[in-house]
View 1 (cartoon, rainbow, N blue to C red):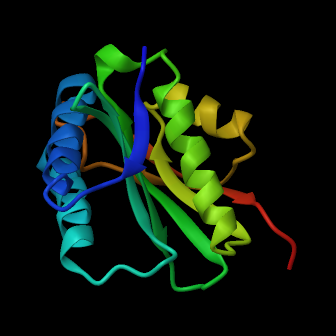
View 2 (cartoon, helix red, strand yellow; view 1 turned 180 degrees about the vertical axis):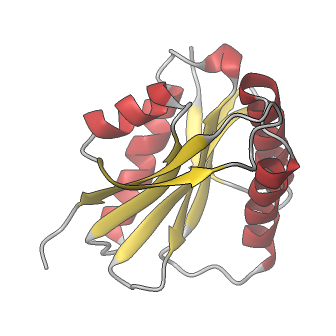
Length: 166
């Protein structure tokens, strides 16, 4: 399958918002406390002035968007954050996610981040395994009682990875 990874274009933040709302409500039964949060992150990214240390990347095939990943600044100039990583269900296992992460990592290193952080959740076991495979380590967890619409408790998991020398 042919696809490309590129920086998002104005207006495509709505795709990122809609993708997260759809995937997490359909695949994990997560409700508005999560999906509204993810939508806000995507839409706010497009509204604010972006620094050179941030980017929203999208995957595209034949003019159709099929995935995304975001690199954001944190309060510490040496630490970048991975956010809103997702691939459309029917395009998984074609290397789209790996290409998105590789592009994300190249950008993070090129702008001088020394560490990366992300938050994920316990039901996303395939994602957690993928993050561990590329070098992220679990550094913390917090119980969450609000995301699931079926009353399940899950853990929000913090993962970190060093990518540069101090």
